[in-house]
Amino acid sequence: MRYSALSIFKQAFAGNLGWTPAWREPAPKSHYDVIIVGGGGHGLATAYYLAREFGIRNIAVVEKGYLGSGNVGRNTTIVRSNYMLPGNEPFYEFSLKLWEGLEQELNYNVMFSQRGIINLYHNDGQRDQYIRRGNAMMMEGVGAELLDRESLKKMLPFLNFEHARFPIMGGLLQKRAGTARHDAVAWGFARGADRLGVDLIQNCEVTGIRRENGAVTGVETTRGFIGCNKLALAAAGNTSRVGEMAGLKLPIESHVLQAFVTEGLKPCIDHVITYGAGHFYISQSDKGGLVFGAEIDGYSSYAQRGNLATAEHVMEEGVTMIPGLSRVRVLRAWGGVMDMSMDGSPIIDRTPIENLYLNCGWCYGGFKATPASGFCFAHLIAKGESHHVARALRLDRFERGFPIDEAGVGTQPNLH
Amino acid sequence: MASLISCPHCGTRAKEEFFIRGDATPVRPAPMAGDDMWNDYVHVRANPRGRIREYWQHVAGCRRWLVVERDNFTHEVFSVSDAAAGRGGER
Image (cartoon, chains in turn orange, cyan):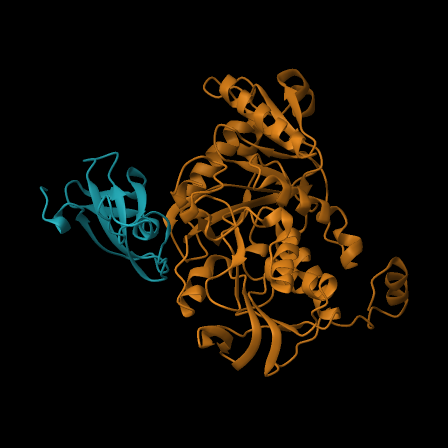
């Protein structure tokens, strides 16, 4: 069923009884051309673009829980492309361009809102570093604007400009950045893929990877063996566990990241704002809740829950940046398991094992990458070579000495 | 993650007193060992779910490096020992 204003009117007059499920619930077939492990944003986007752009229709997505039950439903919904390094920036800009046409493409309202992101700076060195990043963005054709203190005061009068230790001196603005409704992104890609004939198989956990003469031939699952020509892993925080089934050891460590949402307020924060003296980021959802988060907890974890000390630290950062937040009540907090890579950048690549493809290492920046990750992974699976914006995101870049380390902290996954 | 860590030197302390370095299983290769071994040591992690050993430093206490053995899914802590103890070093 195609969604339109007319369909809403028609259904309203028919008592809303005619809506059909957005996707089927098929039983797994015995064999597929491509099986994608992981029914989150990236897995669903990969299936969608494989079918839409690259003409492969015999695809299954296997998901151990329900669609979108992982990080795509557990993030702070920020979409941006304000990266600095040449290996990253073209990829994220490609993603942002896909976001800009995504709702028409999917015929689904993902509530993409280009409200702009402002990264605050608090000292001269940080300002210079932001100017450098802004210049790097402009060299890739991505707009960036440096805001001084006076213009920021007009835009964001509620910030704590006079803080003794971390005074706010200005910010870097990317106007085209924004937010999107995270669940709707998963649902939109799921519906789009289903309409192109992709089988979305939920409650189907992969328990083993079957190989013959070294090459992957299928997966053992809780719903039986499913054969495939190509196997694509998009398992996020559980990448190492699925990879181990094929004997892969990866440059990944799983960590927990928390996010928070407050009670609904009238519109008060118009942009995405990030705090330069810490790692705090905040925006306001269309429902009115303030959505915010900060660093990962810092210890290896597979639990989708975090620690109260980190929650306290996040709130402190928030109140330091916007003192008015102290009066707002937090409604919910949740944790997601992040596949932290050794340089803080993702991996979209083949593996040393024949027929096995890998998409992982998104750290805590995977949501904004969803469309491009799916597109580039689909390109790799269908054509056997990397998409030109994802050529740097290689699995062997660590041993070859070409890491993409935006934060510049080295091979310490809990610091990225 | 448990809120309290029993430092063998300082007693039970809040976990915020510690800095976490990461996986304690990789063993540093000899200086002239091959690129493969160094790559494994620097970049590759087993990253299992369940019982793990991690290097923690008690930065707000004795400043000793410790090995914390814990479950990264249930967050239970099994043992905390001085990192030098396992290598026969000075404690």
